[in-house]
Amino acid sequence: MKTDKKMPQVDMILRREGLSRDSLIQVLHAVQEDMGYLPKDVLVYISSKMNIPLSVIHGVVTFYNFFKTAKDAEHVIMVCMGTACYVKNAAGVLKAIEEYLGIKAGEVTKDGKYSLRMVRCLGACGMAPVISVDGKDVYGRLTPEKVIEVLQKYK
Ligand code: FES
Image 1 (cartoon, helix red, strand yellow):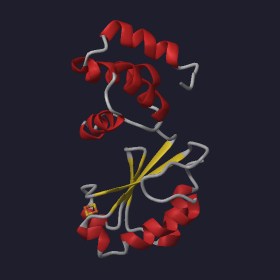
Image 2 (cartoon, protein in one colour; image 1 turned 180 degrees about the horizontal axis):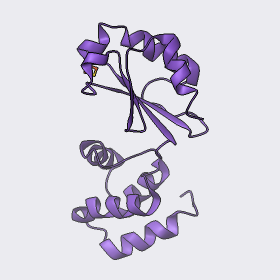
Image 3 (cartoon, rainbow, N blue to C red; image 1 turned 180 degrees about the vertical axis):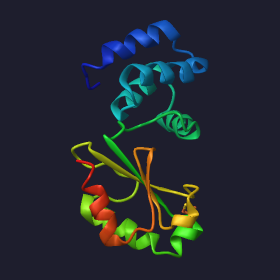
Image 4 (cartoon, rainbow, N blue to C red; image 1 turned 45 degrees about the horizontal axis):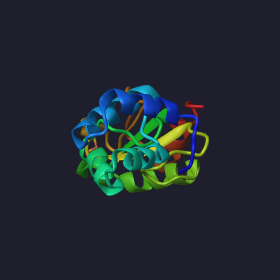
């Protein structure tokens, strides 16, 4: 098995919470609290130690939306693809951001600086098309050109 410097922490959690299937959610919670997210190699390690198929662990992790399998980026960009935004060229705005950052929606830039997500409605339909940055700044009436100016503020 691949060893990793994170694993002693995971072993400690497993000793504390126990190896039975019933402990899986507590184990995942404790690991996420400790590391901030659930890295893939750690899930593989937990799977072998607890003797639970990786597919079952993945199922649990994706079912509960409080589990994260990637570190949060420094800046989280959410692009609204709800109907009001969509008809005002949200797809063009998204494409401009993807090209600017070199990632697709759902991905994080290699330097961990930006993550890009699509969302259903940001509740600001009157300002469509809309994006939000870091969950607090909302920008509306965007064009593919304007959105790049917005992103340049987040270095
Ligand atoms: S549809 Fe985009 S803010 Fe509501």
